[in-house]
Image (cartoon, rainbow, N blue to C red; front, side, top):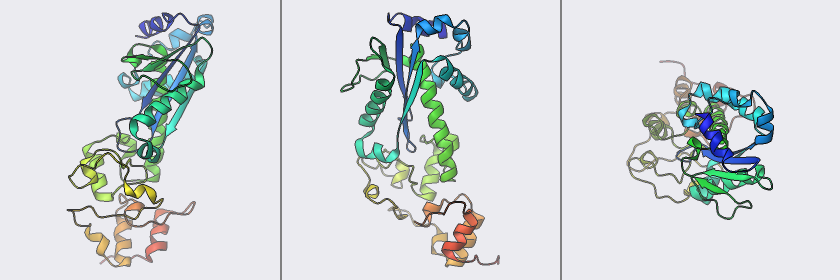
Length: 287
């Protein structure tokens, strides 16, 4: 597969070929990540092993997670330059998904482009960007530079989602990576929205069965939004318990995220159990 990808890039007639792609556009949680990679074909031709090491290069969506992870350091070593741009959920809500996507791709491509380089981007026409670019339909299956960028974007975003899974347990971010799945929707219904969720996305789980319009959510103006009860659904029974019994329930149910029951934050190094007891008081003994 990589032979046809590199042949396409060589066909651009330039020493330097840059490619840009993104990951996380169709998600309900987590950031959007755009990446760009620059290949120097004079340098590649001088490296006898470069093309062999990238023999499995392909669209990141067509590679197993293990193969992507193995290719990532190879891309960093073989490429002339690689960068990524991260747009967090709150900025996507403020600026809109399309604007955020074009802006991230443009910034990434501008960072790697040089005089005379061929600048390729997967699918999207980039307007208002400081370097000329060419959109390539299904670019991650056509261009080596775009395919490499897709791996950088995907692997970077997956790492960030695993970090968010640690910060906001119970949503399954490490598994579904923020995409809309039944398990993800069920977690949102039970736990409410985390700070990592995009309020502007269309998702039934956000409104207990109704569709939320694609506009910034009012909670965005509050850096520490209070947990809210969705219309048409009653609050979980544990929310009405006395503090000590609520503490006992929370300690026995680690999947309930902190944001679902308090606006307070843990201090550095504080365990969840210590945090629950600090906020609610000692837990009631088992009945």
